[in-house]
Length: 309
Image 1 (cartoon, rainbow, N blue to C red):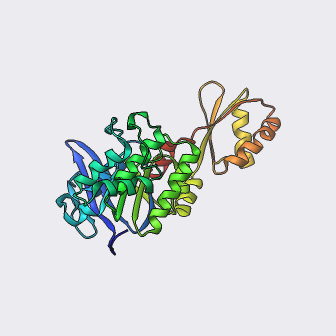
Image 2 (spheres, one colour):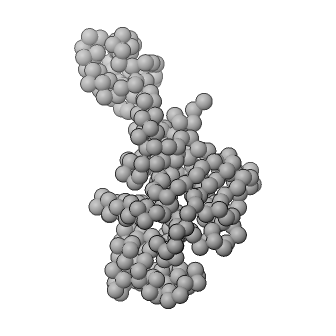
Image 3 (spheres, rainbow, N blue to C red):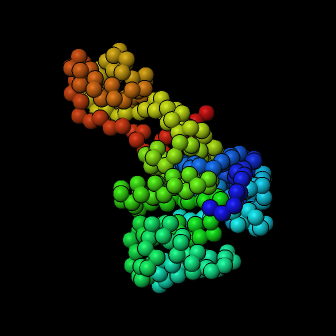
């Protein structure tokens, strides 16, 4: 990476609304060199945060600074940023190098074709590949977007859901690329809505839920917070009341309520222990268990927990 461009990305009390819709509210975050995962369910405000950092949207309140400058004013901040959007809009009849060359020209780079070839190779594609983007796999398209984000040698990289559609090997290779970029001293911000992906992306995480920062810091600390939350499980039994009473007596759940028909909804701090002990509880209650369904496996439930009052 050329130069010794120091400085972080800083958002201070940033809100953005569109008419009556509040996209993000009072977001304060800073990003230093390294990989930071921006985690949140679809519609949480992750893309809006990235657009604000990129200068593609102006905050309704608060300030955004990239390498000390307002990104909406172009100049040094704009030159420091590379963005790979989530959208798939590309020039499908172009080759990867031709597409990235367009980005290089728009950045005003000298020798744009050479810059494009270097970026395409850095993103893991063969610059000599003479195929139109229309024939590319999802992984190749993601790498092409990464290349156009790299072409201006940016200090700050904004990657919006770059792992979408990749197979396991492709994801591991892309994550290794992120790590390599961070080792070069870049600020790499990667958005995702998949909790398991984030664990492999980097050690720092910022959780966005309902347009607000729900948690931030070291991934291990945030993951411990998520793992400590009470989980809901639905259990069906032919003797639901007796089963609920036995589960509470056993200490395997911290709460239980009878639902429709033969179902019980319980809350537990240890779903593994609950699963292991539910049949023993059923035996003591002279009951039969016909269903055991975790209700909090989806990511939306994780964020409901994080933003709960």
